[in-house]
Image 1 (cartoon, rainbow, N blue to C red):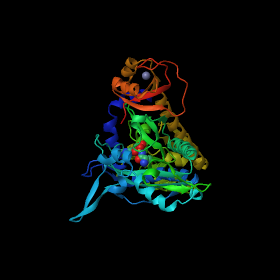
Image 2 (cartoon, rainbow, N blue to C red; image 1 turned 90 degrees about the horizontal axis):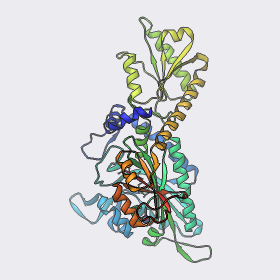
Image 3 (cartoon, rainbow, N blue to C red; image 1 turned 90 degrees about the vertical axis):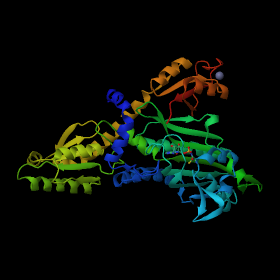
Image 4 (cartoon, rainbow, N blue to C red; image 1 turned 180 degrees about the horizontal axis):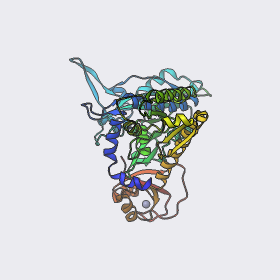
Length: 478
Ligand code: 5CA
Ligand code: ZN
């Protein structure tokens, strides 16, 4: 598999564009760069993935809400670091019809400056804290780097942002740890491997005290940031004068966190599990888990279709998302090709021989293994094959990431590895900003950050030779 992927690496950008269109995930031909259309099959996949994050957030005391898209300039500009970071990325609404607006408005590039002033109306005392909310909505960013479907878009249609409010920094830090745990569970559920890094001080979210990022490695050796968690400290609370009455009667500024993911998580699912034949979808999120294809022989069309219908009903009753493909104008071979490309995890072929022998024939999408079972074991066998497929995909993607993280002892060695599209390279670093920037320049790559749970480091800073405090992670990043 992995060696296959080496060849795959070169053409993966092209593969990605082609497969999302052909598989019916996304139509990216809309005449605005960075905007696409979710097609029905893609929309179902998106809905299943969002179901997982919704459940995780709801279970941990977050409540879903929906906030306005427009931000008046004065609110948007209130927190100075935030506006500095986002000003150039915002789309601005300046007119209502032909009337020039007295205050121009930004389309939200994220929602701290929408949510904090509203929280000020809701939070009075410590009894109102913590407050944990989220929304799933579109955001807009005028990205200047090359746009790419699902990976770098200008309308991020699947932005899930959570915002939390706390009575102490300690509580906010606890929330940061919970958020990291929630995202770990989320990415584990969809079979995406990741590393979590604390972002360097010079590359944090605009307005944050500290930022943590989830990164994964794509087939071309470049990393994709698939989620972030931020400790916002009191920056926004101070800018908006959001305070609460403490237990001893004084007033203090509220402590905040925020964390977000987007359709990049969906892109990672498509890319990391896919192969030369197209998508391979994890069964727990696949819109169709089992595709049944009747294999008609002369004069037996009706018989195989009926048998297929029976299999379909039984699986449906067993709670499996199943589809019977009875189209008579295309051959079984073309059907195999199409559903393989669309990533359906399991295929059942129903032919005269299966009917006669009271057997069911399966083909797994992840490894093309062909298996069979007795008719009576249909539901049970299907479920165990789907579970195996899911586990295999998760494991395979995990091995891929492990093979693409390594350590280097010098800048030279790190640069060679990065130039060969290796993936993530870690080097000892003293922790000083000058050295960090020097490392970025030296290897011409990005500092992803340092491991969020700090490991003991052996070795000296690759720039200044002082004792290394951290292993810093470097990569070509999307
Ligand atoms: N307010 C915070 C937490 S919600 C925030 O906006 N953080 S962020 O800027 O880091 O965005 C969160 C995640 O959204 C990123 O980690 C990235 O995975 C995703 N994202 C950001 N910009 C884009 C984009 N243009 N296209 C696709 N995904 C994006
Ligand atoms: Zn140093």
